[in-house]
Amino acid sequence: MTAEPSSPTPVETRLRDLTPARSPVEFVARVVTCERREVTRRSDGSRRPVLSGLLSDGTATVRFTWWDPPREEIERGLVLRAVGAEVQEFRGRPEITLNWRTRVGPASPAELPRVDAEEIPFRTIRDLRSSDEGFRLEARVVRIAPKTVTVGTERRIVHEGLLADRTGAIALSSWSDFGLHAGEAVRIAGGYVRSFRGRPQLVLDERSIVVRIDAGDLPEPAQLLAAPPRSIAEVEDEGGGEAVAVEGLVVGLLPPSGLVFRCPTCHRSVRSGICRVHGQVEGEPDLRARLVLDDGTGALTVNANRTDTERLWGVTLEEAQARLRNQPDPSLIEEQLLEALLGRRLRVRGVGTHDDFGVTVTPESIDRIDIDLDAAAEELSARLGERR
Image (cartoon, rainbow, N blue to C red; front, top):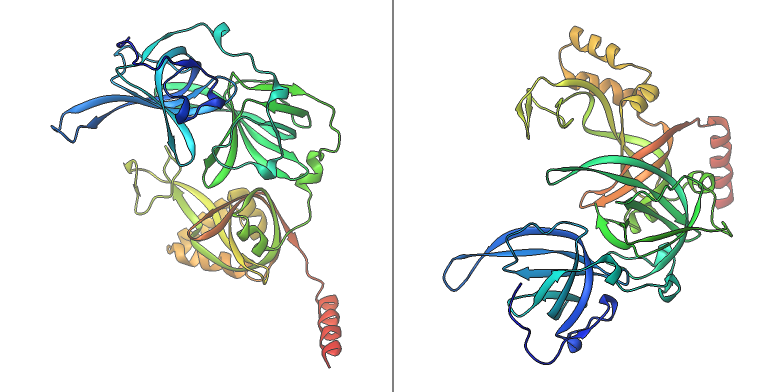
């Protein structure tokens, strides 16, 4: 597609072996992701096309930049052979540059290097970090379910779930259907880790290898989902997690809570009939409670949906709407919700995310913990007596 590469002669290389010292190189790889855009030249202000994304050959996944790519569409999954590609290093990782010196053309999937899973180093979930690749992992499938997403103009199926081993849990996003079922123990090779909403996520595609194995000492899904609560301080230190379990007292509500109205298209909260994405809309009523939970070591936010809010409050959405008709001030509904929930002890399990405002848990379950006041008083009295 472009001119002959300059000397020295490129050496065919696996992606996992790329270093700037080997540049220029020859390789065969599959396009994992790609995005076409234009950049402005500093010299004359003209626009220059560029294609960037990820390439994988089964041994590693590497970022690439292709300057002045061909006009024809470069599709995800296309296998390419590149001769004379330049290798650079960015933040300690190799990156590939394809330019006018590089010859790039289609190749057969059969030309991709054969990869023996045993060649790839073994890792545990606790060891994984964002951008990791080229590892083997043995884990239990805790849950898995298909989800339809839009990629550009294409509707695709991605299988989302949760994997766990003895060291921890990690979210899974698989763009290929490996027929996974909850409870299975698997050995995975050829995946890579990305950061999604501040948490690591394991990504699989058609080049990944998934093999069923004996469970060994891998935890059962029920063990993970029924793990004892941890302190909120620990959860904060770890930046949340895929299977957070905490217990604490409701000490407040964050707005908007109570009776809210949502955009019928994107389900975001609307104010005065205005959605920040879709403009003027007819909002659909909903119940939610943004609970502030405190256990003495720290505090976090729990986003309870309509079902959990109705169960905890004892008031249905229809009943809340009736109250609003009698007292047309939504803040009064929020005050009534806070009065009903304040001081309750709750045990919450779910996915915890971390941002500048702290940890927020999207719950899979919320259970009310009844406090035995007599027992609590006796325990407090005993502690005070020990201090005398």
